[in-house]
Image 1: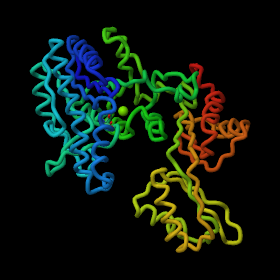
Image 2 (image 1 turned 90 degrees about the vertical axis):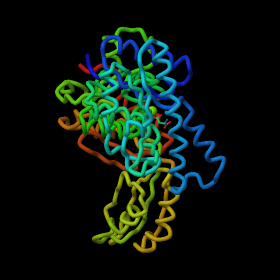
Image 3 (image 1 turned 135 degrees about the vertical axis):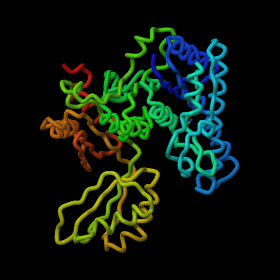
Image 4 (image 1 turned 180 degrees about the horizontal axis):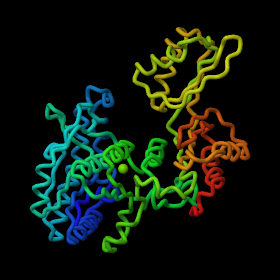
Length: 422
Ligand code: ASP
Ligand code: MG
């Protein structure tokens, strides 16, 4: 018997029929003697629907003053889910109780629409578990110190589930979703993509931050910080398969580096279309120039990703970096109006039609020639690399967006990711 947290995404909660399936699955685990905490998302499409209603009422939705109200609205999606799931569980003959975030409470800071969890009080939940109840807790939400309802950012139920698992020191947090695990890359782009049985926590962190949308990145960070064993698995397997079978399906996000020792050098390929590139041409190459350019960008709260500075000619250099595509217009304006003139840049140019493709693997730490193999594969396809960035366990390139799929396929082939590593 163990304390287990299950998280069910919006698709898994998408209809009464699916909620009944979730209830049957949870009931199976509870009957096997496990203490169960379940964290569902809103029914699929519901959060968008709710936020859409707000948008219909005011063009100001999106500006920070209204974020408190948006959280008030968006949090109801999960509130409906927990109530429905608790009812469905009782219909299966399992005692269950539902809670919103503030009832637990899940304490967060006050950054509405992207709040961070600060602490979770487990008293109430533990008492219910001890009384033999399944506890159903609304994902995606919490409460700040002034009793305002907050939400954790889109996809935030993953983070709720992992944080709750950490607070309760759960044996495992199972994230049930509409895919059956983490793949070497997106199977919609590479049909031969293979499901990974395990991926190391660090690799998952890179995959998630590089655009693989399976888990909210913060949930992976949380899992790493508190060493919560995480498994991503499908909620579409028959609910009555054996627990043993279920418990080893999907992909385990593991902390055991040794398990990975004999595995592939590269574990997966991630890609991200959400970036845009900006360049300052002909800036004076002198001490402090990078700070002069990037300081104001950081002050404007714009995240910078890849940065590149060229070798200088005649005391001038070109300086490029990438930002999120949502920040592109704002960044261009900042560069054209302030930073460009202040740094005496000859010209400011931008390109929103780029993408970033990355190879990820902890094996890259101990192997040489991995990046060059990547560059060769891309050159054989005639793909021009605009920027490169590396860390210990990944190499990313920025390329023209129109070659993204070609690049991902070429790399998947070059690193033979369709084959089980021996
Ligand atoms: N319902 C929220 C969203 O759609 C949170 C989640 O699903 O994880 O973003
Ligand atoms: Mg999700």
